[in-house]
Length: 421
Image (tube, rainbow, N blue to C red; front, side, top):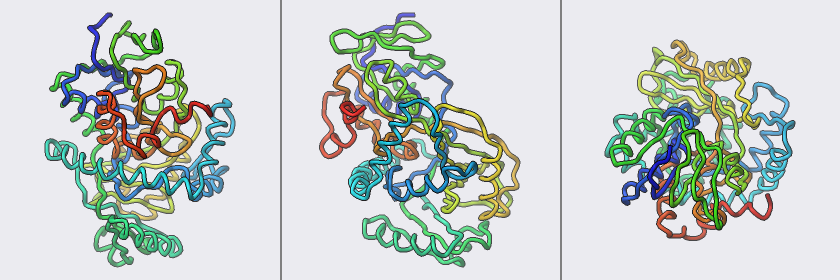
């Protein structure tokens, strides 16, 4: 099948691809979106749906490195790393470890602050149009603790959040239970991060897909991209399961598959998949009113209308999509520790998917030097649903030929890995 040449062809129908299409269509561009599955799918479907302007830490940090090493041989821990596999993953891990420094964290936090502020504004604007259809709400994110030591440390960090303009209330056990009566006696305290919130991720993706279709975007589902035909340093067309598709510019927003797809297009980018799980239940008898992070367990609990979702785990194992029953049972035990009366609804769905992670903990948003008409929008790890709007807006600006201002442009440049890949 040969289609008319589009202004922009977007590879990936998740939150990054659809948000990019949303802003491109707003500017009058003709857009084709290619998705190898059926929308909604991938990590844009089964995640916790958190809106987290208060969470600015990158995945690579001294604390996370220490935590990862502590759980290295724990089959049911919140982190897992497969040390076997190809050399590319081992090189990625070495780079990740090198970026786990306080200096790098400070630089990454500054970048995430800019992205978070703009994305929150864009999410609020989007919600004015259709937020009721995907349960968008910013009632705060309640981070709860089962140990006094962790709670004390979090209380100190809350002071830093307040100084940074992200209001955070320190709540003792009684105040936490008044806010969320479903929490059990194991909870010794919590931090209410007031700017944060949640949405229903699959409903949000459905809303975006309908909206961009109404604005003239052509979405081709069940369309796999095999490679690119290039000429004189630019992509001419993509080879797909539906034939050759021609475009002027191309956006690679394929989530965890971005690294694989980039290699097929001749421009390696170190995006590594990290597997996560979620379990969705019927709503419990004792309701949960806002998203909750079970901090020591590293598990999120999100109310999604008539259901409740438990999500967690970061497993660097390549594209191994096997499901560990021990891991799922451990997640359920963690939830019942904090929410003893909220895990009794019937299971609706068990899901696993892959998050796109970069070795420096920052996304890749920018134009490749070669092929020069390829833009990349990926690598957001656990922040993808939140940062989708700002990523789409920035990528649409890049498609107009407008560079990103520094320090964002340099920090997010997909070419930053080229000399060291």
